[in-house]
Length: 66
Image (cartoon, rainbow, N blue to C red; front, side, top):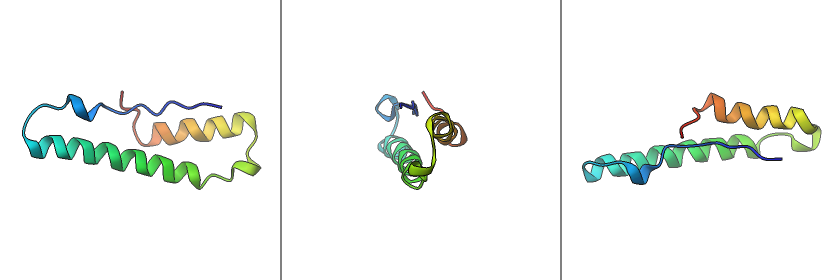
């Protein structure tokens, strides 16, 4: 089972040091939230397509990014 949770590349941000740090922080928080949601799924109770829907929903609810 795979899921693609794309995010904007924070290394592509140009500007001040603060802007670059903010971009990395935002991506970190987004990925942290997605991973936390994934880790809380009752995987043993979800089968095939139900699990895939949950994984896709995590990406859609939190923005698809790249």
